[in-house]
Image (cartoon, rainbow, N blue to C red):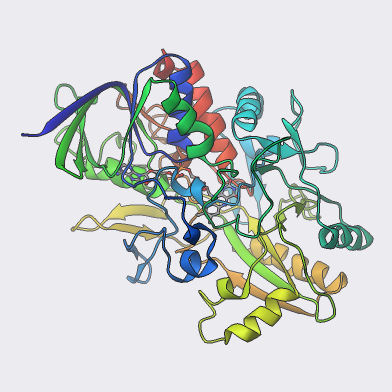
Length: 503
Ligand SMILES: Cc1cc2nc3c(=O)[nH]c(=O)nc-3n(C[C@H](O)[C@H](O)[C@H](O)COP(=O)(O)OP(=O)(O)OC[C@H]3O[C@@H](n4cnc5c(N)ncnc54)[C@H](O)[C@@H]3O)c2cc1C
């Protein structure tokens, strides 16, 4: 017999969107069931092991997706665990800039407007920053948007190497500023500023991930239950085409039927789209909530590259490196068009480079890493309907993508390299992100006012199915050129506070 479980609101996925939504619903006294396909990452020595995390891929699923352009399988940058991708994320939690919510002309097309403004989201950015313990400072970064409340906590102090680098960058004519970080450096906080943060699960619960900051507090209210190891496979509308009747899932003990009044899908941009496509039925032949034919389309993941810059004469002794950014060209690269952001990354160790530079001896990689500093060069990936998530006949996720915005990316990359040479780096290695490095993916179920051109309404409710919301990065109409997680959280808080989801 199929087990049936009931709840007022069923949340699928416990990452940034799902965990935050569960927390916000619990604050309103709503009975919530979170259904998560993964298990919690155990606290173990391997949390801190670059070899385990990067070489042995200990916390990544074995699953492969298909690259629709080359036909080749690849290992996606997803983590099917309680807390989702936030368990390993870098916890850089900036707000999108005010202009990111409007229509912006780029060299290779238009970044479309969002169906709500920065002002609409601003109060929820404040709440999300408090929930995820964001440390930051105002007044250093000319690109930053206005805010109605100060950062909850002051910015992280830079280590001496970074202080010196910031000085050299200022000397080269740019304005470095502090990164907004979600780590627990509050007085008495548990962060020890270790070398295993960006890309690693935190052994001390000091990272502002959705399990530590949202889900566990939500579970403590007694209003939220968590079902792990349970993959939702289908969303059903058996009673009426415009109403979800239940979802079907596969749990450790076999099939489960889950019944709610309202449903939140927060499985991440690829899996949420895949789930709607897999839920096609006679009333929704092209996939659930897909009357616009937009489900799965407009897949974006930023145009990103790592640069590793080596100064032969300067040892980099930094432990926690991710504290500095350069946003001088975020809005205007000099010709009125935006470029993007440069952000320091967590300090890379030789063994971590080995995960992709497999032919290089570790000893050489260690020499390089001891003298290098790493940056992320991030530019906007413009939406295109042909860049999309689809399912193959056997249900495998297929991602077809031809990046839009590559000339802008090339310009920022060249500029970043020139800047780094100017401040003393002799050798610059570039690692462009390929389709498997999709950690910032978004846009597969875009939000908008018009049901003919969008899947979700401005509160992330599907236009076609009245009790179905999607609260993850799928709703982004554009990717901006900033890290996505804080915006996912803020939009989830807004949907709970202002739409029927939270009533
Ligand atoms: C190494 C790394 C570094 C990053 N650094 C940053 C950063 O510094 N700043 C930033 O803003 N962002 C960063 N990101 C990206 C950030 O983590 C994601 O944007 C964010 O977590 C996406 O939130 P989400 O809710 O859309 O999906 P996720 O957080 O991925 O959550 C989706 C959840 O749904 C579950 N799930 C999927 N399918 C099903 C199903 N069928 N049934 C049940 N459960 C399901 C998954 O297991 C997962 O728990 C990083 C990501 C990675 C991998």
